[in-house]
Image (cartoon, rainbow, N blue to C red; front, side, top):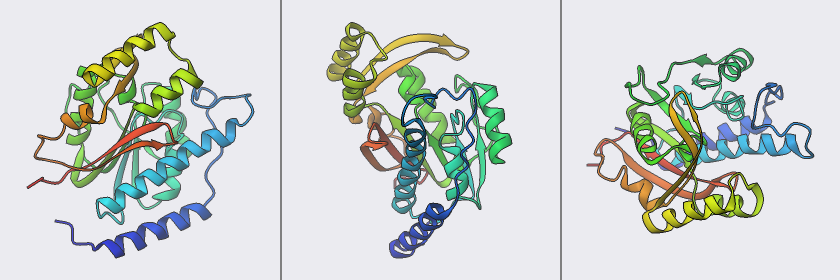
Amino acid sequence: MLECNHESVVSAVAARLQRYNQAKVCAEICECDGMYARGLPGADSQYFSVGRSAIDLIARAMIAGRRPKVGSVLDLPCGGGRVTRHLVAFLPDAAIYVAELNKRNEEFVTRTFGVSPISAPPDFGIPPTRSFDLVFVGSLLTHLPADRFAAALKWFISALAPDGLLVATTHGRQADDWERTILHHIDPRLWSKVERAWKEHGFGYVETERNTAGSYGYNLTAPSWVLNLVENDPSCRVLGFEEAAWNDHQDAIILQRRPSA
């Protein structure tokens, strides 16, 4: 059971943030990092702001969960290290693990940032082999159909150590606005069907490709739909749900592996 009082946790996390803000975050970027808009104006500032936003979100989760420090972290999917490089600077005393379907990206991340690779089943059909104090899941659930979304969320909860924190991002109202006005990843006619299902049922999805794990695409999820997946799970508590919490784009749910009663 956690015994840290709120003031001491806030002070400890604030001190971590101060050290992180003074630290040098590695600027080396993998050649195959698809999240880096290479050649476009403002690519560097946009790329690094996303990582910094993740740290702000994690810091709030640590305060809410009364965790002034964490011993082990999982960043899945790590991509080319957009968030990992910031985790190393913010949590230098933690053992950080990463997983990524793109093994070129994963190899770059482990070699460049001195973190450890870990095997994770693409379909989340096999239980985790170890547990973590913090799991960050940025922009993964956002691309899964409903059944795999639910399976993945259950897998990440089961990967938490006692009092461990899960921070997972989802697509909500802000992501819908970005897609319609800025990003245009999906044909507007298809996206309108996603929006309609989202508004009527809480979940909308369109497939864009198939990979080793199955269907992959873009979804929209209502907070109520996401919370419905966990509200009857006695093993965890909902610490928060923040709209547009990650880079003013994706929503975030924050859970803690702690009995609800």
